[in-house]
Length: 503
Image (cartoon, rainbow, N blue to C red; front, side, top):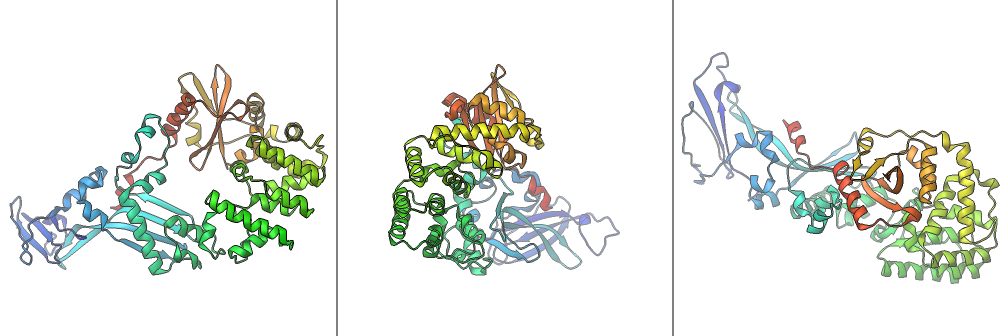
């Protein structure tokens, strides 16, 4: 069943009729049957009518008056409609040419009123779930009714207040995932792909949006690539051409074999491919023997905290001005054997000072020395520049500054305070000055007895990382506190207020 039968009861004086200047003692019963038969009956007020459809003998009709009340939609949708009806709804898809936006919406047509002058039934479209995709591959999902997403949480997530985004909960919900499959099917039929033929071959909406964003990529396998932003946007790429670009179009056969072997290894081992390390060393290491040996170092797991794809390339380029390629090879062997912190921290902080690094002197080609030299130089520059930086935060971030148990939660007010936090925690927080000011990230300090104990970074409405002194992970008790705080102040609530905008 994919249509509903409706009964709408109205006071005749509230609708358009031929006697609008006269107060009439009647009311209207409007019956819309799923078989296609409609009937408008005028009767005495408060009269009771047992109606059966003359065409199909249906006697069950949904109460349209109930569904026209916006408060009714606060109830879980499973209590409002039969589950088969919910499942087999079809999306309405259209393309907004002016704004270059695709909009897909699941709607239920509910009788709202009648026009007795023309004997027409007037409907309102109640949005259930909608999705918008722009020409850049950005997409926005919106629920207009209650799908009881909290029911998708696991017992462990509830027990430990673990944050789960609304997007993740939507992807767990059976009906909403079926809706998204249905939307994708319609998008393929309509061919609203913003010049991406690959998007029409995708198997889910996430892939579809990815190839709209990267419409220069010509193979579905690119969906498994990380940091594809490095590939020039104005060129079309197959996998082979992209790998040729990654290796800087170098001609050495031994290197080509290693690049292809590394690609196959990453795809098999990690189910994805990250090109940053190979991209960086092929542009900075000239000696083919050293380069080939460095190709065998696996830095896939180090990629998480290198916050921009070209940062590593910039860092290695600076190293080549100070050390021999043989020394750099030994350095990266030591990075591979050590914790990720040494490489990631050094790369991140160097990025902050790269444009002012002409006076930076690296004492030794050892990870500890390089890290310390960069931090000292960065701190020296801070005294000249970032100490004067003042941060501004939106109200929703300021409201999260509160007290929980023994902890006081704060935002840094300026570069000086951030530098002090960095010193106390012995980490790279001082290097976050620019990206905090540009509102690319948010960092909170958690204090106990006026001493900072750990910091929490939030990006894209998610906990990006949370670290204590020396970049150590938080204890379970601390992480539970952070998750509870985050859930209270940042978790997106399922709102049905939008349903009120439909009327």
